[in-house]
Image 1 (cartoon, rainbow, N blue to C red):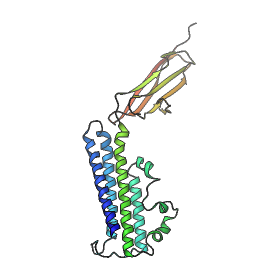
Image 2 (image 1 turned 180 degrees about the vertical axis):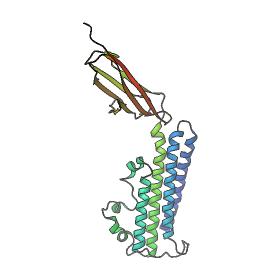
Image 3 (image 1 turned 135 degrees about the vertical axis):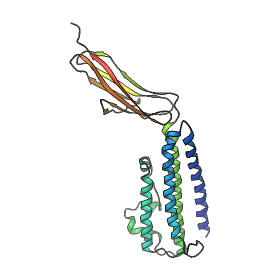
Image 4 (image 1 turned 180 degrees about the horizontal axis):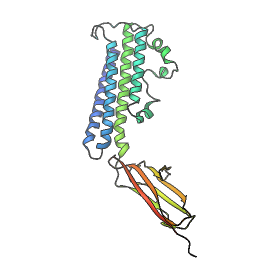
Length: 269
């Protein structure tokens, strides 16, 4: 019973920490600088806690006999074990599907079982033999408690991750603006026009996405896109559309569209 109490104490501590983190994230929704991104990530963090609560309660029911934790638990058989494994798989997928950033960050380090078992290729065939076969009912109960502790640890990590997106995602800018420049406004036929487009921002990277003539451009090491094209041979007025998408100092997506105007003239005789 000492181990059982230890798991309960650990889960209670994790619950307090996770709830405090969620409350902090919720409060950021009312702050001007963070309200936009907090409004995006607070529902995701809350959803993670709801999914974890359902999984935790499912395991808790497996630990009960006649609704009382104090009574001896029925031994976990292979069928119940298989059902538990399926639910844990669904839980894992549900957490990963909350957001693509969560998928990218946690898909290769979501440890629900044990390090050795998580790395196995054929988990379905070995789950029962790895955790429940040959146990008595008391040891089965401890294994279930450990699974509960694992998902509470994961819940805390992912909710903290959601909160981190508020600071790393928007940060503090002193100023920001879209910058679009060109080498010349008047060119001779066959000469090259060069366009530099980016975001002027201080304190954090604005992570711009830039398209020129509706084609995505690669961002250089200086944070800008550099476009070069030969101008038409026919004299006249021309324009090139440029679009810059970035995140402003309040964490809100912005799109700036501009046409770079230039003129092709015939060389003097």
